[in-house]
Length: 195
Image (cartoon, rainbow, N blue to C red; front, side, top):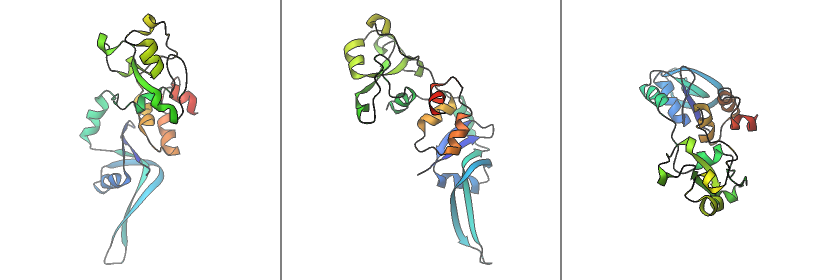
C-alpha cells in the first residue's frame, strides 16, 4: 500500500498515513492544500439526483488545525529500538570495518554505542553507529573506538525531519521523494547517494 505524506501548513513533514485516514481529514475540512499525483479515490453513496459522491487525496497533503502537529514538530525524532532506521541511515555499512551487508546479511548488524551505555553514553542518534557483530562484540566490546584502535569510517548524526521521513517510509512515491529531498541538506549522506 502506498501511504500519504502528511505535512503541516508550513511544509514540515508530520507523518505517514493510510489513504483512508487522509480521506477523513479531507471530509473534516482539515486539508489546507495538497501536492503530487492523485493517490486514492473513495466513492460514497448516490444522491437523489443520481450523482455519486467521491473524495480523493493526493500523495502529499498539508493538514490544518491539528494541535498534534505542533507537539510533534517540537519533539526530538525518535531513535527506534528495532534498528531499522539506524541501519538505513548508515547504508548497512559497518562503521569500523566498512563491510556492507546486503539484505540477507543484515542479521549480522548491530547498534553500537560509541561511548558505551555502561559508561554513561546516551542512546541518541549522535552516539550510535551500525557495526557488524564481529567488530562490535569481538573487536570493540565495551570500549570507545579510540581505546579499541578502531577509528570511525563515518560520523553519526541525527537526521533532519525530512531525512527521517525518507528513512521511515516504506514505498515512497517519486513526488513524495522529490518533496522530501528538496528539504534534506545537500551534505547529507542520504542525499548524495540517491540523487
